[in-house]
Structures are given as C-alpha cells and as structure tokens.
Image (cartoon, rainbow, N blue to C red; front, top):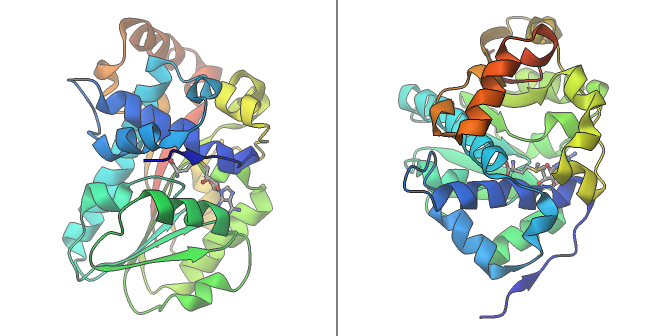
Length: 272
Ligand SMILES: C[S@@+](CC[C@H](N)C(=O)[O-])C[C@H]1O[C@@H](n2cnc3c(N)ncnc32)[C@H](O)[C@@H]1O
C-alpha cells in the first residue's frame, strides 16, 4: 500500500507528534492507552517522525493526557447516553474509535478541512452517528450546523495553546451559549510553558507558535454564567505517571516540588 505523504506545517503538523506519542505508547506491554490504530497510522504515513523529537517520556505523557480526557468523556457518556460529543482539533486522534460510543451518541470531529481530508483517507469511518466539520474553530458559523438539542461534551486536546486567549474565550462562550448543558474538557499550558515553547521540539520543528497560557483555571468560570471548574489536574499530578521511564518519573517529582514549574500544564474539566 502506498504511504501517505504529508505536506502540512505549523499547528496542523504538530498532530503527527501526538499521533506518534500514542503509537510509541501502544508498542509497550505496559501501554497506558492501547491505541493500536495510532501505530497502524504511523506506519502508513510517509513522514520523518524523528522530526517530532518525541522521547519515550513525552510519548507516554501524551498517552496519559489522552487517557484522562478519554476517561472524563466516557464518564460523561455513561451519565448522558444521548449526548453530543464535540471533539475539536481532532487531528488524527482515534478517540471515537477508542471510546466506541453507542449509536445514541452524536459524535462530531472538527479540524481544518485539509486535516479532515487526510483523516478520511487514513482512518476507517466509525459506525454510528458520526460526522466531521472542516473549519477553524475560531470561525463563526460552523457551530450553527450542530443541533443544540442534547447535553454536550466538548473535548479538545492540544488546541488551546494554539489559540489567542481572546479566540479561546469566544470559543468557550459560543459552546456554552449554544448547548443547554454539558462539560468542557481540555488541556492547557501555563504562561511559563508558553514562554518556554522553543524547548518543545514538536512545536519548534513544525514552525508552530503557541499563544494562550492559563495560570488560573477559575478565571474561565467568569466567561459564562454557571460555568464551574470541576477538576484542575496538574500535569505533574496526573494518574499513570508510574508508567513513565525512571528519568521521566524523577523529572515529574522534581517539578511537582518547584512552585513555578508545577503549574506548567493542566487538564481541566468544567461543567456548564
Ligand atoms: C497538537 S495537534 C493535536 C491533535 C489531536 N487533538 C491529538 O491530540 O492528536 C493540534 C491540532 O489542532 C488543530 N488546530 C489548531 N488550531 C485550530 C483551529 N483554529 N481550528 C481547528 N483546528 C485547529 C490542528 O489542525 C491540529 O490537528
């Protein structure tokens, strides 16, 4: 089978780093995420994955982040079997395949049209009520295509840092204003992480730029009435950190004890 040549750059190209991280994790007998489809995808893509600079520690870190967001999404769907899932900046993430939602769930993957075209060529179409929307999440309009009739889980991984704060605020306000109730789950960098972005090989090598860092997860609560932070999990306190290589575990323990470093990133869950 011909391998798929990649011509993306910038923020779009960074999806190959997270894909590669999940593939590396899946090859381990002690895998956190068991994303075997990610590994199949990596083998079908003609790209020098060394460019991502993914170490074993960063790969397993990506898998841990994805696992926590999967677990929160699955928990929401268990309580709301007739829900909409809005998976923003889906890239080549196989979240819908990993979670296998029941047919009563409406699942919508959103990313730029060129990313979705690649996704369509490389990934099997999931069964059930599934569709994609090709747009920048900052565009006005695309959300109007989504019926506002159900509790909604908006999950976005590896997105907020590529947005300007004002665009992130508008996005959150549009989602919380559109749907009757639901949750938002996403990851973010702190402002220190944004300042240190040149140290992240996947970002630097793709020529991407990071903008928005969140230091106070409670600030976001003021952006919509009733928006409430349920969890603010520091990256250094995530579950499954015991799966990291010894050097990674030590690094995390050290960071957790240094006040300016411990808030370098968060996984956030809000209810609205
Ligand atoms: C680091 S990748 C993460 C992809 C995927 N969530 C994952 O974890 O593998 C960043 C993704 O954000 C998408 N992205 C960045 N800015 C976006 C925007 N304004 N609208 C839609 N997608 C965007 C990129 O196309 C890319 O797929």
